[in-house]
Length: 219
Image (tube, rainbow, N blue to C red; front, side, top):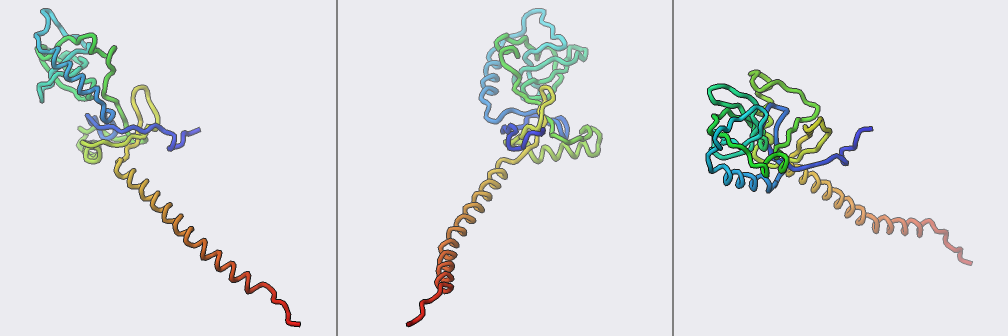
């Protein structure tokens, strides 16, 4: 039996990477653990890597992102040759290609065994779109998702789960609050109207009762 919408899990999230018009990665809103992790990584990655360090595919290590030169946790997904590696940032969901000198072995206290990946993979439920590179609907869908949800907190209702991926429906929290306020106002106004009508109805009922009451005949 399907779970009623009112009983489904809801969580406020912020998008960190859009893979296509339906699939994206996100942080749980106001997660203080992300900032604390970045500070620890910056501190432990100040020194050069140990001699003989060689990244391997599947290894989770620290990587220096090309665009901002900050250190993040990343999984090595491919060896590209010429000392370059393709990596996936597990706390944000984006990718990069970096050279060996921009990689560091990860302190065990900062590994996924101690701190789970912060990026949550999500997919818009009941929606199928093409790849953003198809030059058609896929690109437009990705742009539309970014315009609707990027750079702000959104409310995700979890429809179901497929492994570690959440299938969600997204809502604008401001609109949800506005809808609730409208419903409350309507209910309050209806209650006031009913309350105002009750004395009037009671008075009319009393007058009608007096008119209908038989009068005593004069002897």
